[in-house]
Length: 159
Image (cartoon, rainbow, N blue to C red; front, side, top):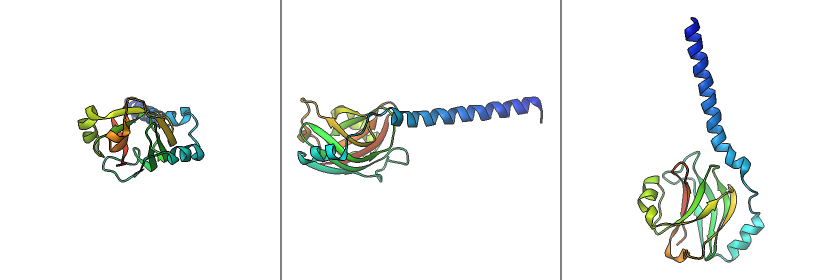
C-alpha cells in the first residue's frame, strides 16, 4: 500500500471518528447538562389540577428511533406536564396547536397559528409553565419540537 493511500485511509478514518464523536456529543450533551427532572410526585400534583389528559406515542409518522416521546401529558390552565420520557436532544420547545400534527411539514405549515409555551429541559418528566397570555382552551394539541434542528419530536391531542 502506498504512503498516499495509507494517508488517505488514515485521514478518512479519523474524520469519520471525529464526525461520530461530534454526533454523540450533540445527542448526549443535553442529557448531561439537563437540570434535575421533576419527581413523579410533582408531576402528579400538577395532574390533579389538569383539565385535559393526552398521551405521547412513539408511533407517530415523523417519530423515529432518535425523535420520540411517550407518556401521559396533562394540560392545565397554567402548566403542562409529562409523566414519561422524551428522546434526548437539544433545544426542545413546547408548542400548542389548533390542529393535531405528526410531521415536520404539518408543523411548519401551521407554526404561525401555534403558541410557543416554553422550553423543555428534561427528558424524563417535565412541567412547563403556561404564560398568562396563552389560553390552552383555544388549542387542541401539545407538541414537542427541536428548534435547533427543525425536528418534530412528538405530539398529543388533548381535546
